[in-house]
Length: 128
Image (cartoon, rainbow, N blue to C red; front, side):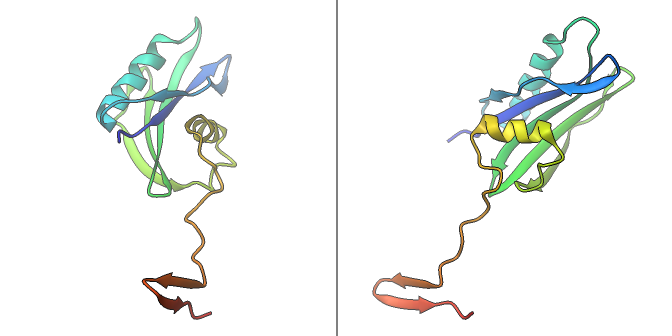
């Protein structure tokens, strides 16, 4: 199954940093997702807006994989990729919006480990 990404752009408008609603990207790999997001957000700027950063988010192994590409003095910087926990989005409303766009619960982590498991008739108990 192909990964689903959400992208969002941070835009400087009248001196303030704002973001537009995120959109889903459905490419075959991260390189194509980055290219598609960059093209879309470059083409969708309103008059007077300055693109500050493009952010690409996907869920991978219970964590958020985030790729960012900042702009400085009109020149695009290289993409930077890092991972965050899904719980660390309270101070990052643009990432929280991407999580919502992807349909993820921002407070879901790994499922809780049960105290007792029964596998093939054998009972395993966790030491507490």
